[in-house]
Image (cartoon, rainbow, N blue to C red; front, top):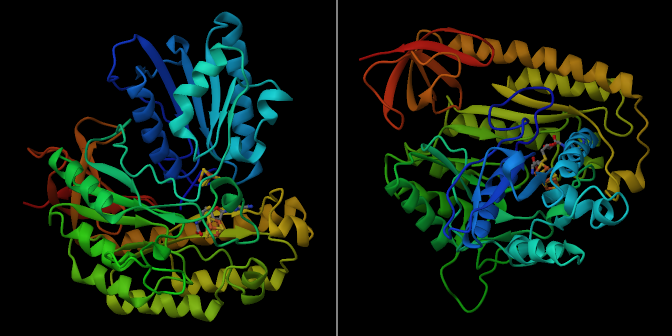
Length: 476
Ligand code: SAH
Ligand code: SF4
Ligand code: F3S
């Protein structure tokens, strides 16, 4: 899953996003939600808004006027948590002005720190982990009665399947659909299995129904979300056996097929694929349906097999490159992006160079790049020394970023002079005379506005580019 972008910006992430929506009940109470971290957190905030709306809370974009403020947080790296702490201090000041305001923390940092921010640091009034959102209305009431409003229980089966998310801060064109929660992989650097619990898949019927509903409401693109979408399975055991009683069994390739059949005008995307689990059946389904976008985010983390083994990623450099070959065999024009970590425990200069040579072999269109940040409780924190000095981590990361920028620019330059199928998302950020939308490879395209509106498909001839955007015009 793509998440907070400290180093490369992405318009959906990194910066907190505020929301505004009417409630079901008219109580006059207002909720303000700020989301940090990965797409899953943004998607969860829409579930939170739905649950709170049933309890009479209308969302607002203005924190000062809110009765309840909830920060949906990320714990993936230390700086993600620092940002939330700074924000919580600001709300402490706000609370002096308005002592009745309830400030709560949700998401992965809430799960990781449990009651600490409430009891020891006294920075919040309420703590709810990712599987406890149905309890939020009760927790808010508990704050009012002076009780300790903490619920960080993780669940083995919660998927919020039947909750219709309240689409917040939406462009009305693209929406997220969560298909799995949690992660069973235990990559040694990663805190997610501790903050999100065991992996579980959501009922395919509720996923397809949500896609239908979105299409009927004018949406034209859905992104299926999970930490490892390839391990989606319904009524199938981890070993691949059918789980009795024999109902319908569905794997990820079959799920994508079903969602693609909702309507040929509904684009389907997904995130994140795991290199160890992404097999050819998924690629075959992608190649079969024109409306499944030709774009795969396939995090590599490192180009060296020994580092990958220490990271507990479950694949080697060779296996990873074989998966890249398979993608290109099925879809020669497929966009490919990745995540890279520089300076993992014990990483040598040669191993760092292996990451650069892998990047040169694959030539990613885009990448999210980070330096290693040790997370408490993880296997790496317990077993390996975080021994690459921070200055060295930063130096290696700069080399990775520098190389990727050149690859991104080269990839976009290759797209110049070609036409691209673009789904219009709305006006461009810089000018209301320009519109923007993505091509199938997920590259943002900007072009002068004609008579088309958001949600329409247009053919754009690319004429120029930056490393992040294609600039062109609608070819009629
Ligand atoms: N489930 C996704 C990743 C989710 S976290 C996957 O398996 O690919 C998103 C990215 O954050 C990871 O791919 C990794 O590159 C980065 N990341 C995770 N833990 C990190 C850590 N401790 N330090 C630095 N980067 C980390
Ligand atoms: Fe973390 Fe690995 Fe799971 Fe991704 S697959 S969320 S990196 S443990
Ligand atoms: Fe996502 Fe951050 Fe949690 S990346 S799963 S919000 S730790």
